[in-house]
Image 1 (cartoon, rainbow, N blue to C red):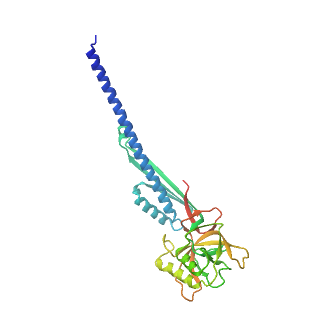
Image 2 (cartoon, rainbow, N blue to C red):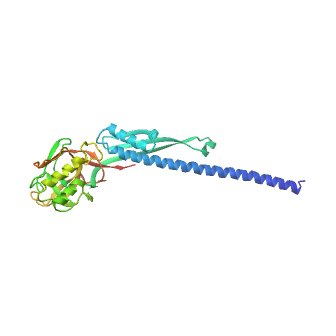
Image 3 (tube, rainbow, N blue to C red):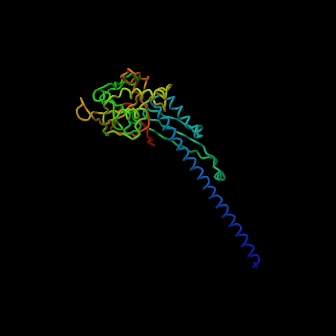
Amino acid sequence: MKTIKNLNKEQRGSSIVIMALGLALAISLIGLVIDGGHLYMTQSHLQKTANASALSGAQELMNSDEAVNEVVDEVLNAHGERESFLDTVIENEQSLKVDLEKPVPVFFSSLFGVETVTLRADAKVEISTIGEAAGAVPFGIDESTILHYGETYDLKVDAGDSEAGNFGILALEGPGAKTYEETLKFGYEETLKVGDVVNTQTGNIAGPTENGVNYRMDACPEGNIYDRDCERIMTVLVYKPVGDSSNFKQVEITGFAYFYLQERMGKNDDSVRGTFIKRVGAGTAGRNSADRGAYTGRLTQ
């Protein structure tokens, strides 16, 4: 027959076993929470890196596949995820998909035979025509103009051309030569979108045009059409006349285009020389925007 003393010893022994089991369970749960949090943070960082590399790489879709992959590699390296690179898929200059994969070591889960967990992240960016953008210069082309990218264009800016022909001088921030010159130098700060109506510019603008163009040329003397931050690449508006097409005072924006300045202007020049280029830049996509080579990228997955 068990004595009270023996019963107490057995109860204490059972309590110790139960406490030990409870402590082990609690440690295991804490370990799983720590591992789960670590995996969640790693997955989040991996996805953000995939998004950033796809968005940045897509800006080079109009350049070359090599340029796209170079930018993707730069972004991955900057985020410490170069070793996670799995693949890029480029489709007809229209989309870029970046796939990443990363084996992540776990801590407490190793007690259950799980040493690593493989995480994956992918991001796809598709490009479409810009329908809304800031930073446009007060130049515009009629939507009927068929552009031949890479060819040289002389955009006339002498008297009369602001109200007729394929090329228009626009008063984005209001009338006046000084205002026009400042807008040409620095771009229009406000956002413009397809459907907006703006006035044409009148008066003597040859001098202000020369000043604005040469300012941009001097700000990026060694630039080329592939530079991401070169003032020689300007956002210009695509428009259709409002009212009498032979003598209009306003235009309606129907799209955007990019124009690369090729050379400085002289005192006697009456045109701006450059070429229209295809480019993926900043802006918001627009379904009804005229396609004149100005695109923006957006994440689709």
